[in-house]
Each structure stands twice: as C-alpha cells, then as structure tokens.
Length: 142
Image: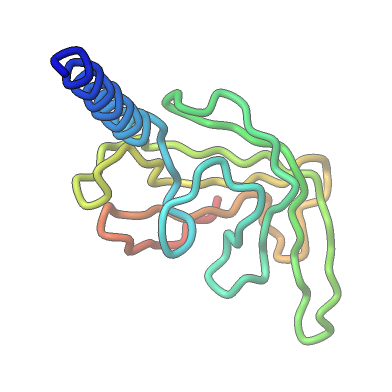
C-alpha cells in the first residue's frame, strides 16, 4: 500500500509540475493586443479603426523579441466604391510590456508599412495603433 501511495503522490507532483510549466509558458509567450482579447502570432487583423485597412497572410519573424516583424499583404478598401487595393506589407509589433491586467507580456504597438513605390489609396505608407494595458488604443500614421 505504501508503494501505491508513493506512486500516487509522484503522479500528483508530475501533474502539478506540468500545470506550473504551462502557466510559466503562457506568461513567457508574448501576445499582441489587436482585437478584443490577446492574440498569439496573428495571421490577420484590421489596423485602421474602421477596418478599411487590414493586413493578412502574415508570417512572423523574431516573435518574443523587443520587436516582432511579419510580412504579408495589406488591403485598403476605397469607399464608397468598396474596391480593394492590395499591397505587400511589413508589420512590426513593438513596446513589449508586462501587463498585470493580462498577466503576461504583450506588444502594445503595431505599425504596418506598405512596401514598394505605391503610397496606397489613402496617401500614407504607414498605419498603426498604440494600445494601453487597459485595452484602449489610438491610431498612429506616419
């Protein structure tokens, strides 16, 4: 019986260790505040406040560093015609910060830069947002 109790205790310790390791990994893997809730390596999201400028098909590099960079496609929707214009884009996440509200590190700033000579429908090459840990944000343009 003592051997069985010992094995059960070891099993419980193994489960507790796995849970602790999982929690540590959750805090270690940074997220991005881009939508309601946190996202890990998002593949698509709107950059503008009204969704007329969004990025998609993103492939991330250097995730977890001070800056994470992705390349993909930006789509601008020209209203009122609703014609979509697509451009190659570089997306940079920065301001990696620990937010106690989220219990993890998050990227608080996103910048999407249209690549190539075309300035885009709206005449700007770079769009972005800056967040707070509380989830509020402001638009940034360069």
